[in-house]
Length: 340
Image 1 (cartoon, rainbow, N blue to C red):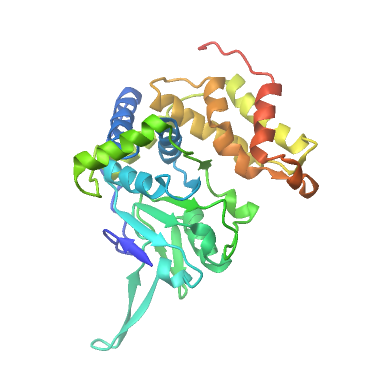
Image 2: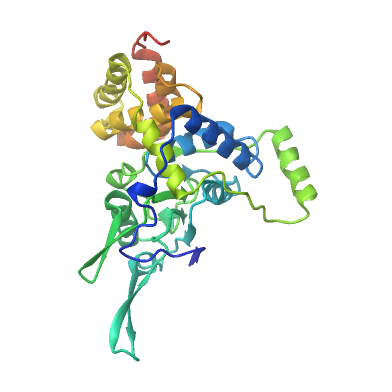
């Protein structure tokens, strides 16, 4: 089942290089804070998690939201799409969902005796892949191919996806019956994995009070930017240089996961690159033009934990990938930087 606001035309990109506005780092910071302030109106008390989600998008990546039902994952994705001014589509993943339901398919037009391509929900700016672990691996693979290549191939023809294109996928970690967990190689395609967690009592009271004040279920947010503006923000972050000591720290953290005694498979070089990219974006979101080791530590759980596989014999002992990453953050020496 899919829900889509606007479907892109296959083979076309809505934003060209000439339409991307030049954005400075201070302007990117200001716009990022406006985005977070706007989303805060809909998603209460999740500023830190939303910073990680926004930093991942600004780094050009995709996000996996893994948490219990009812904690605002879908609301966060929809609110972020509205605030970023992107076309938004939602695909509800079910066991009978087919790859063509995502990519689209060729339909025979009897009037012209030709086959016309009808694009699927993948042709959008931001796709919410709801409960991605409830659909078979074949459909998961169709989505993950689009995430990596930014294109889809149907009946031998290749169609480019819109630019920018981002996926926010959700997964329920507590129900396993009728699910198809993502393999490690597919999890690695997500730049970060973020959890919201339960709200505090005061935050939950705030949620209820805001709902009564609105007098309606839905909340609509005004765009802070648009697709061209988002590309400009991403281009500004690419100009940020990172000290060698911080780059080395990212590499040492990722390498430490491969040498850990409790780890079967550690993070690949893609993990250390993800640390660098997301921490760089987070630094700009927080108003700095330089990256500190604390930025790397802030994003490490979201970036590394889904790239670490614990040895099977330790699954019942309470050892988790997150606990391993936390231990490494305490044990791997933190460098001193000139800016810090």
